[in-house]
Image (cartoon, rainbow over all chains, first blue to last red):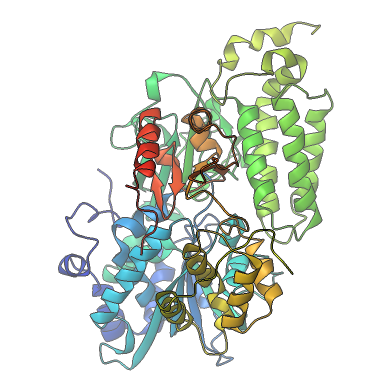
Length: 455
Length: 175
């Protein structure tokens, strides 16, 4: 069993409640931070830990905290990003639903470190029952004196509230989230200024993912150095992985960063292997926006080294032969999955979720969806594959937020690694028209048709 | 502006108390921030949709312009601008759920209820919708029903859910 620091107490009966959480050592990090350490030392420990943002970008959390503007004298805020919406990702919900006080403890300790007196947890509106769980847990924490005025007699005041969105993937982007928290449409802001200087209501603000904040109590209770000993290289600590698709045991798993992809896929501690023991075809290791990789690049990198569950190893080879750890949304495909249909499905998602501010994204995601839809349904043209390549290239890097990139990358990777499947759709339209839904005949059975010269 | 559908406004004391509690979470001069949570509460209390008149009412309560409410309501997918079936089956149709057969289940549900995706049954009881990723990929196929998720769905579970809805055994809101 690998080390657990987030889910180690998840099976303690009643851990959802304040009493049981407290009896099991809960809120110790708040006491230690306020009574013994002081704010600057808390920031220092988080820096030492090497903890990287768990929302997907992987930016060092301590460094992000150190950017917060203290000189202006404006009120500072900590905002927790619980807008988890990246397809394939459902880990934050698991933490909030089953051990809500861990996040609240992390929010208090982190707010103290940043000198924030008013903090929010922004949760997606669809997680309405989890919103209510957090509301109740915040009330319990407040009743027990961990929130409000003069916490632990230190003179430190903090109010923490939960705030709900209403169904918009884009609000997971931190500046769109802040717009939404101000009661507006979720249109991302142009950076700079960064939220650390001008965030919520133009005040200095740090936005961190749920899992990032939930890792802080352990770091403070132990030490940044202890945390940095877990994991591998610059991928320190543990990571929650949301595993879904064609595997025996879908669910949320906490791994030590650096475990091999093979072990994660096949051991009984984690995914337990492929459902019905069918062959593995492809993997999206970090949520729908990261490049899909084919079976020959999953367990080994192009250089022939073992592929590990770490930021560095999963991106080894760049986008040519690698992918990204991203949010840890681990989607597994067996030989029956149609890559064209999957790519169309993701393109539809991004088209639906584009906020519409930037033309390359607003128009481009729509074109991607349209062209992919006609290929998938047997109405594609020979030149469509190159057209798709061209469209995605013109979206990437040309928008003010990363949604454009997120829409472009899956399309590029699918064409890069599975071009023959797209060609099959275009050259044999009668075979793909009126097919059953997602799961269909293995492509390997029809690949030989592509060798023929004529349609 | 006028609405195509009529709605009786009912800003009850319970609802107003909840709205005031939500407003108290934001600084005195930043009450607009409460808009999204307030709209959820107001919609829940009005058969799951928001008429122009109701949006105007929300604008009045938050002391903002009506357009500031309309532009938000039209941006976020969880706000409905027309009447919906009492039980809205919102299936997640993003890829991880498709890998586990959600499209077949949607077909089954539509056939059983005699509607197409996006339609409401004649008795006003059911609406079937396909929505984007709900963050439950490991528990697929699944749907949202009111404030809750129904996961690991099968045809048998759909049958049961439909029966439970008809017999008024389903809790929709987490209040």
